[in-house]
Length: 173
Image (cartoon, rainbow, N blue to C red; front, side, top):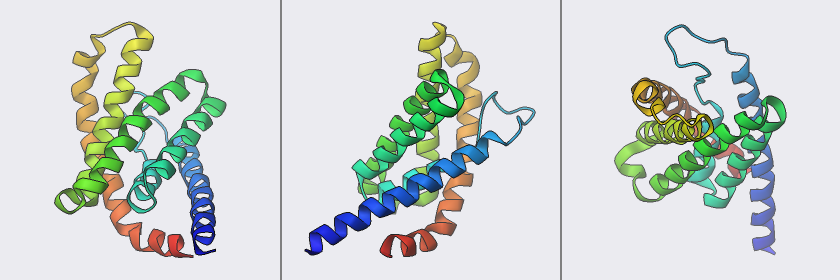
């Protein structure tokens, strides 16, 4: 009976976290382009939810949210947005799951977030190269994306660290 109750809680938590991730993802579409930032670049606030799930509930739940976010991008912004979301999201989520399991104490939330942001941008850059057939994007766009990933990783990691007590309370409900 206890196992069923725990599974029910994890499913409910995953639903709540999916809703939160989708709301944050949508809110990011409302942020206007910022001069000097890469085109289409966003801070990745919904990735806070994915990292939380990777650290608290485990790999299947984190990947479920990543896939739902990718499908949401497809429905709201089109097929290319879905491919970009999934390519960055899957690589980033894999990194989060591994780092929370093996390096949480060494890297902390901010370090994990920076690595995940870099992985997300690498995945998206690879997808952009494949879609466009232009491998030179890596040279021209890669360094800018790396800098942007460090900045956004710092931001999302700091937010995750700040909201972690609240999210942990929600997870225990």
